[in-house]
Image (tube, rainbow, N blue to C red; front, top):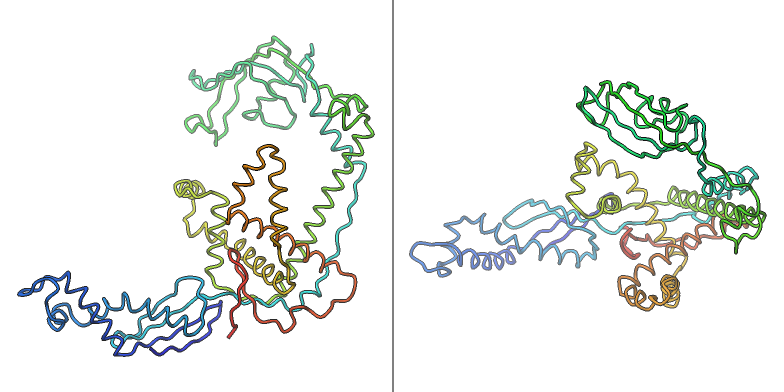
Length: 452
């Protein structure tokens, strides 16, 4: 067997493989026996016809193709081992010549990743400010949550809660019958169809009204689209929303133990807002820093990595139910190829980030210890109380522990990204200077491949 190797773009290797005639003959003998055992050769019992007779009957080319079914995989795997090529997916095969066999295999291999001057990146963290208006807005939302509904003896106004019977028909054919419907009448918001909210406005409890309204051209019932509907409205009750006072009583109603005073509630709201904004600022800094690392990194990876990431996005969005997937494609009016293409950009970004993070973890010697995995598992099951031991046993599988380890490694690596991006001192010599080309995938542990 003669093998030559050529590096191709997009993390591919071309193996040109020529099989010796002697090896072909051995494979032809095996192929002949397989064919002879199944062939009906006149004058011979199954499997007893000589090779020359079988070869004359089926043709030498057919016999060679039968031999290649087993020969090509064997030779290909030997070539991978001989050339130290780490395939990450099935090859593309091209038969150049049958006799003697000569074929080419285009093999997707591990990505190459060079972080370059990754320690030079700098990102300024956005300043966090909690304003009085922001605090008041949050407290107003709490206030509305604890509002009470009070019956009123006046006509319906905007913002009121209405309880009413509603019926409607088109050409004397009923299509709506809703008794004791309860809804809030909001100015500028459509209630079922245009004009219905305005019809209720100003009505009083016990009042009835009939009104004709045009159904829209895109109405949900196709046969009624664009037609005029006759509505009968009966208001049974009108309530208004009364907001609690901004005082200690409101704070204690929310949680008397945590908020004995309104000031304590305000302080909690302010602290929660600040923590939320701090987390958002950290996330943005982290994302901006990682984007910079990806932008300046030198990356090469096979297309199959993007295809696998597209598969992951589809599973995240739609699960594993193929019928649900096909129904969704029909609903959005896209073919599978069109939908996959719409996910390609996001998938490619995820692949790049994953490769950079995996390489960063390696060059920065970021590791997760067994003790850290155990501690994280304890934290995960602790809220379960008495059920914690049972949950721990469920999670403490090989796959479960591996998932925890990957998540912890990701967290520690992202923390290092933030740390690098906010260093005050000048960038030191990169830990990756002179580094060998690294390799890592979104669904595998970091490995190495010669760049060739």
